Amino acid sequence: MNTRVADAPIADVHVAVIGAGVVGSAIARDLAGTTLTLALLEARGDVGDGTSKANTGILHTGFDAKPGTLESRLVARGYDLLGDYASATGIPVERTGALLVAWTQEELGTLPSLRDKAIRNGYDRCELVDAAAVYARVPALADGALGGLTVPDESITCTWTATLALATDAVRRGAVLLRGHPVTDARPDPAGGWLLETPQGLVRARWVVNAAGLGADRVDRLFGHDRFTVTPRRGELFVFDKLARPRVPVIVLPVPSKVGKGVLVSPTIYGNVMLGPTAEDLDDKTMTGTSEEGFAFLLEKGERLMPSLLDEEVTATYAGLRAAIDADDFLIDLDAARRYLLVGGIRSTGLTASIAIAEHVHELLAEGSDLVLTERDDLPEPPRMPNLGEAGLRPYQDAPRIAEDPDYGRMVCFCERVSAGELRDAFASTIPPVDLDGLRRRTRVMNGRCQGFYCGARAQALLEAQGEAR
Image 1 (cartoon, one colour):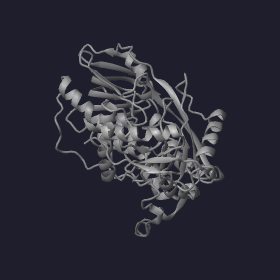
Image 2 (cartoon, helix red, strand yellow):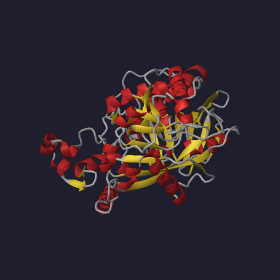
Image 3 (cartoon, helix red, strand yellow):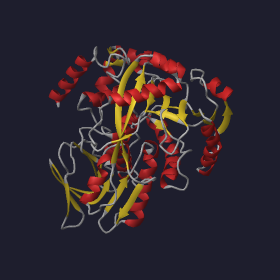
Image 4 (cartoon, rainbow, N blue to C red):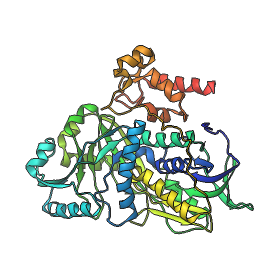
């Protein structure tokens, strides 16, 4: 079985999936479980290097989705599928639960309808609680909370590991991963299907699945459509030091309004606390930098929600772009005449829904395409991913493992307790990192208080050594 990550475009496949974010990787993994040949094309240098890497990392129950939508169905289904997959692969998940907090009478009056919406979405575990119960759960909240709504099964996870696990699984199942292969044009293949142009050459595919995220509208137009526009919606966040974690035992959600879902305070799977995101519509799909205005907005919100949190050190700030479209649902559509399937308008719930979206795509292709999706009976075991979660056992805590291999006890990054053994494993993995950001996403190196001031030079030297060895 081919488990090679391709360095050059392949010539001919049944299906090409464009976009190796969490959704594209999930689709590639699913289809690679059949006898079809598959290519996964990513414009950037690594999987999960676009919108997916800046996801807030919340595993959603779908309690607040719009009932009856495709999104509500796939998020609810995806919650179970991704949860099971996390258990099988070692993707870290913490079942923290969430609490919506009402600060005004209007918000308090909205909570019963939110509970009813959750029930219509098939989730019946939300409970209305009074102010005393809110403060008993989160004592550090600012004064003035009037009540809340519990969501016991909302959880936190690692979007980095989830995307990498799905892509790794796809490659081990035989898919060919083509990193650094943006699709610049598509033209019909005289033999049937498509010829996809990339700077590295042509990829021939009988069918194409567009899961290009922020670029999905541009790719869609390559296939003769002009039906939607992706507006990059920037979300900026503060990440606070691990010492802040006891203040935020659960995900603290605002009561959503017509303007949006608002700013949350949440623990992270890495032991930190995050505050955000903002929601700013932009014209430029490359503007992932933070802004003075965004920081001011978050500081104001933080003061209102949990003023003591602002006394803690900010470890990092970052911004991500969400692929917003002018619709309140996922846009997933099969065009049989063109042998083309669009997966667009996938918002932040795409992490949770990813495997369910892949399942849905599989069903659409099985019913509406000329492809024969025969399930294979020789699939490899799912990959076992390194644990990046603070609540699980990390290598530096594993005495038997260190005794067997002392490299797991040799620290490279002291802030995040990342060992030389973990970096070695990342370089030797099915999809090795090609830059420091990719190494960070695989190990947490340079992700702590000093942001690489201590360990960055050594990490860079190890990365360069690996590049020379390849």
